[in-house]
Image (tube, rainbow, N blue to C red):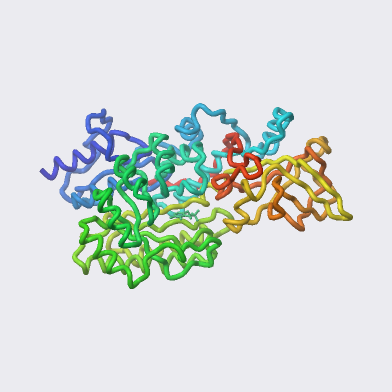
Length: 503
Ligand SMILES: Cc1ncc(COP(=O)(O)O)c(C=O)c1O
C-alpha cells in the first residue's frame, strides 16, 4: 500500500516532467519517461516527489503538491530533471509571448533598438514600452539563488502584461491574483488553477463564485464576514489568515492600515473558520510595498509562527503554508538583505517544519516587473522661460506616471534627441538646463519631473524612462482622451545574468 501510494505520486509528478511541478488537473495516464528505479524504495524514502528543473525555483512545489503531501503525511522531495528552463527559448515560446515579435539584443542593444523603432514609427510618435524578457529571466535567477526555498506567486496587479505573465509562468512562477479578471488573465495562459492564490482578503461574492468554478482553491481572509462569504460560495477553498505585521518596514506603500488581522483578532478568526468547517492552511502577511527596513520580515515571520501555534492549541489541523507576501525590490541591495533576513527567520521560527512540512510562498510584484520595462515618450511641446526649459510629453500622471502619485515613485529620464541631434541622440557631453516635464493632460497636477537636468531638446525628440514596469501601465487611464492605458509594448530579449543554482 505504501509503495503504491509512492509510485502513484511519483507518476503524477513526472508526467509533466516540467517546470510546472505537480498539478491537480494532471492526468495519471500521461507517458512517464521516468525510471522508478531511480528512486530508492526503502521505507525511509517515502516521499511525494516533485520534479524540478536544475536552474530555478527550488523546489517548484505548488499548493496541490503541498496539500497532497500533507494529506498523505509524506515529505516533499525534489528531483532534478536537468531541464534548463531559464533560457531564452523557454520564455520566447511561452504562452503570452509566442506569436509576438521578440527581438534578440545584446546587453547594450536597447538604445539602438529604441532608435530603430522610433525611425520606423516616425509618423505616429506614440509612446511605447520595451519589455526585456532577459531581465525577467535574470530576476528569476536572482530569486532562485537567494530565496530558493520560497516559491514566488507573481502579483499580477503590479503589471499584468501577458508576455510578462507568460514568461514568468514558463520560468516556474505561480500567481497572486486579486480579482476575477486577474484569474482569467492567468488561466488564459494555460496556467493551472492550482498555481493561483486569490490573495485579496476582501473579495466580491461574484469573484468568489468564479474562483470556485475555476478551481482556484486558496485564498486569504482577515474578517469573519469573509469567512461567511467563502463558506457560502466556495467551501472547498483553503484559507490563509492574513495578519498585520508588527512593523511596516518604512514601506513606500504600507498595506497594514487596510489589511491584516490584529493579534487579538487571530483566535476569533480561526474559530470562525473552524466553526464554518473551512480549512485554514496557513498564514500570510505583506510587510508593505517597497520596504526599506527589511527586518520587518523577521517580525512578521515570528508573528506567523505564533498563529501556527495558536491553531495547534485550538485543535485545528496543522498549518503548512507560510505566505511572506511581497515588498521586494531588485534595485540596490534591498532584496539581498531581505533574503538573508527571511532565510534566517524561517530557520529560526519554522525549523521543526522544514523542509518537508512547510511550503513557503511569496507574492513579489515589483521585484519582477520594475526594471523589466522601459518607457519611451515623445516630446509634444516646449516652452522656454529664462533658464528654465519646459517640455510636454505624451504620457504622464494620468498614464504610466501614476506611479508618482500612487506608488510614491521617483522617475528618471534620459534624452533621445534623434530629431534635433541625430549625430549624438543621447546628447553625450551636451550642456544641460533646469527642466520641467509635464504630461499631456490639461491638469497642472500632471507634472512628471521638476528641477531636472536635461540637454536642450526640441519638439519631436524623445525621453526614455527606465524601470517603468511596476504599478505604471496597470493603472493608466484615458483622461483627456490620451490613451495612456493602452500603450503598446515591444518585446526584446537580452542575455540574462545568471544566479543559477542546481537543486
Ligand atoms: C496582497 C498583495 N500581494 C502582493 C503585492 C505585491 O507587492 P510588491 O509589488 O511590493 O511585491 C501587493 C501589492 O500591493 C499586495 O497587495
